[in-house]
Amino acid sequence: MANAVIQVSGGQLQLQEETSTGSITMKSLQASTESFFREHPEIPNSHKMANELLQYIKQSRTVTTSLRLKKLKVQPPVENTH
Image 1 (cartoon, rainbow, N blue to C red):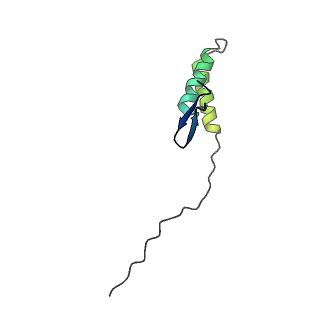
Image 2 (cartoon, one colour):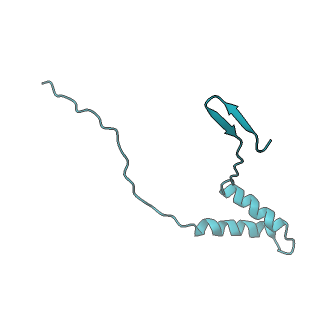
Image 3 (cartoon, rainbow, N blue to C red):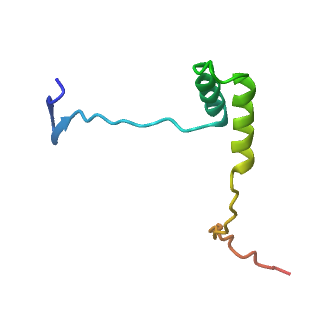
């Protein structure tokens, strides 16, 4: 069925597999680091090490600021009828 083609009025459709990777959030990074350190019993105090690593990553992030133009809706001029 992977190569099946479906005939519809106006053309044909075929399934296409698409793979995407989830984004890295602080919560998922925390869970991943804790899991990594838990799986390495040779590392002492794995929970503390995971937290220290995550804090280091958070503090090491670079922050950039940029400017961009934003198009505003133009309001029609108000006529003065005095």
